[in-house]
Image (cartoon, rainbow, N blue to C red; front, side):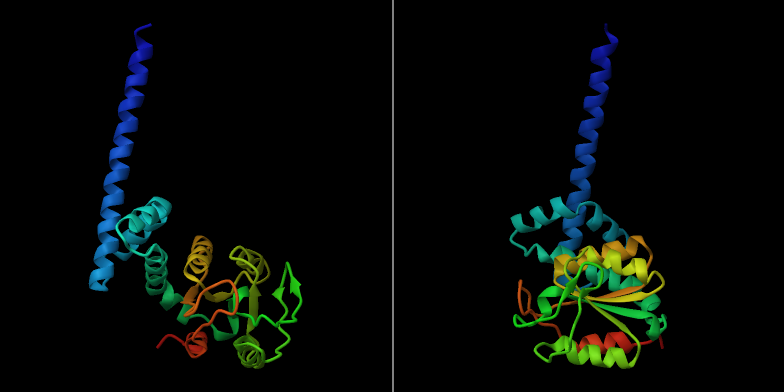
Length: 217
């Protein structure tokens, strides 16, 4: 009978230790985030990325509580992944690259059909920036997809498993897609929208073109 309380006491101690370790890691990660925001410099990128991934949701709440924009967490993760993975992406064959745009980048007047497997089938109507860009990609045999959601990239990769991917999205969707690709060890580069929202968002298309045709020097 005496062994039962002892067992639960040990469990209690383990639980307290876990809470303390979690709190310490969360504090360290918050300090790292604050330091990155202030100094514009990323220290220990690999370790920082691991901590950000592990503590993603509680960290976002904590960041908001100290009057910082929660998007900071996503943007730092995106920046770190770009720095870590850019050499592999830029070393890939341009012909093997695919581009994934977000659904919200389309014009509100877009008449293109949507397929669960292929996303939006762009008809290059000229009502948004995607059509002209797709024309350039078509002439270079580069696939362009317009994704109905962040998980769409998984379906794309089933048909293009050896591709490297240029991603365009808002901070939440972009970070989610980059995590998916990182887990599959797929070369990638992410570009944030410069205007976010649910409809008619915007991106620096010159930057997209530059990153698409950039190669390792």
